[in-house]
Length: 468
View 1 (cartoon, one colour):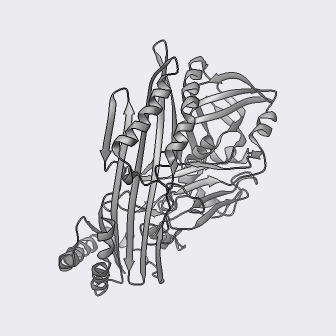
View 2 (spheres, rainbow, N blue to C red; view 1 turned 90 degrees about the horizontal axis):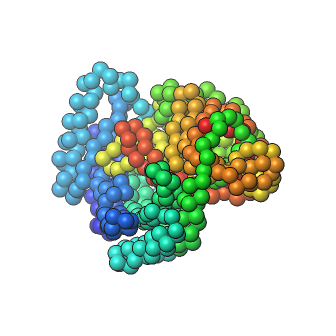
């Protein structure tokens, strides 16, 4: 599959050349995609394919002074070129007859010359391991988890996606091959009729070597689930909180990541647009997005043919820039940051986060906990919602461990709702940890619920947060 895509480069270049006779700019993104998932639980063992978004196909994008038109298809050969060109010209003519099209006119993308062939590294290729061997390892993990007295069920799953993307325009030829793998375990326990659960995910830019990390955490997941059986409801209020890297990641993603997606600037739906150059966080906070770290969202170019990099969004508390796709960059008069991402070749590109995180500081988690008179250590986030227009945040956290006079008391509270006004929360950060962790076990949805893989994280942080 991946090799056949490479053999089409000459025909794809011909397609672009033919389109350039009629349009100011033309490009094609070709994608070959392969994915597979394995899971075990009380209900049995299962294997599925094609469940990690993507798909194999092509999307052509053309520009002229009147606007932009895209056309996607799932099979291609040189003989298809005349028909594809005809379809695109027909679509362009139809769109430009629409009175609303003039308001969507976008500058033609910069097409500075670029060539690249890159591949992400991995140790163990899931495609080289039998289904039986993978299910056997997951079943062993489940057996160990379910052996803890009080655990009702313990499910395990692992998934990979391998893709090759080729982008060709008049002056660019980019080729990348990437594999990421994720895994997750979920444990259930009961307290009367109430069910408690604990979820732990794992991710890497790589292969099946991720299962080594899963195996190291089985007992911890079971023990944390059982510990939830003695949890108490939270008394609402504002508290000193220490957030573990997973909770920090949820704050990064929900509190500020969506708020600096610059397609929201174009639509005037993000307050961050008016705060460029201003303090929006503590001077201890610096925030990045991009490929300076290796995780599930790492890529070498985006789905619009823009090279990716490290974007410094917040620099020591000051909002420096947002992240943007090519169309939004053109409308705003800025350079694209390599964040134009599609769920698949059949979907449009939005500004999307990639690997988003707070930079590390100098404190240890132990020092943070010791500095808290009364508050909580927050762990195991489960979900979040953001309001970029008003900078509000509401997130769910599974565990809050009580801290009193600088020590963990052993009391835990669950579930927890974390709320607040984003700048207030970020400006209240008084300590940041000396190491960062990122995770990409889930997906991020946007638009008409297009989903892409993202990772987020950072260090432990200490802040004042409203809990309920």
